[in-house]
Length: 456
Ligand SMILES: [Fe+2]
Image (cartoon, rainbow, N blue to C red):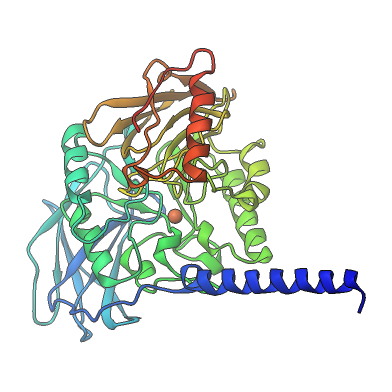
């Protein structure tokens, strides 16, 4: 063997060893799952959750969990003038360390401007009364949207949601951009419910899957509890039923896309085709998309070219949505645009990533948790972002549209300083990512007209 060939084989050998080492050391992180500890299931209903049916003006769906024995549950539903018993369906749901029964009851054709009281009745038990209000047909819809929650056990998201709800008042619904749980185990589900229990039996949730709601693997699978925990409308494509769906309001279509299900080329094609149809067939003045993976990523090391490939031309085409809400990146970003769609990346998690301070962004934040209020009227979608720590207004934007004319985006948050702080988890670290973060932040801070403040 010539010396040249020896060198070539030595290099190939070294690369193979390095590759094997890298794959072996990363395998658990890529494909391994945190074990689920055994858990007990209450013998009375818990995790009682209200979602919208396909028509938000008239349809609701209730779901709950109860026991490891199947019961015959019904919802006793009352208005001041009427009372009815509606049977619920049940399903045995097995997770890695236990099983339970979930129940679902669709309440369709409800009256507007009415308060409904309900309780859950089995052959042996009856819960306390709960209630929800059906809004009057009005010109305004108001909701709170939150980024990834992913609370650790004993985390402070319950406090955050309580304070946000107290500051902003009653909402029509709460929307979550996915990763509501840190990992698919019962105790993380319990953490999520400790945040939403104060309102989830009476105010509908609009939920989206995230990668943390999936079990990792070479081919990821959704936590089997997800579909039965939330009574989302079953109007999506077969492959993503209950996880990709849409809800119609008076003047808005709200479209949720399960981006984590998109792992194979034909899955992207199926999702794109469905989204295209749902957008084209919409007769609503406003169309809003909720998806976990953003088209424009906010943090260093994050990019989703396949999402842009699948959806960008749709979103920026003739029937595109007005607003696209996403999460996943654990830093905040409002993409700069003068016309719709407005792309937002939201974060409500305690775990912060390093913002890439993208020059294409109109506003970014790093090292801070935020919550958003969105008010939809015939004239505008007004979105306000608040710092979770203090409740201070951090960002404000309006999407304005007259019937038959393109939507225009008005930036009302430029005058508020951007806070691009080094997250606590990176304090004292000086690796290449932190250096890159500081460099990109400096570049942004030096741009004319920028108002950037930061702490390290
Ligand atoms: Fe995520």
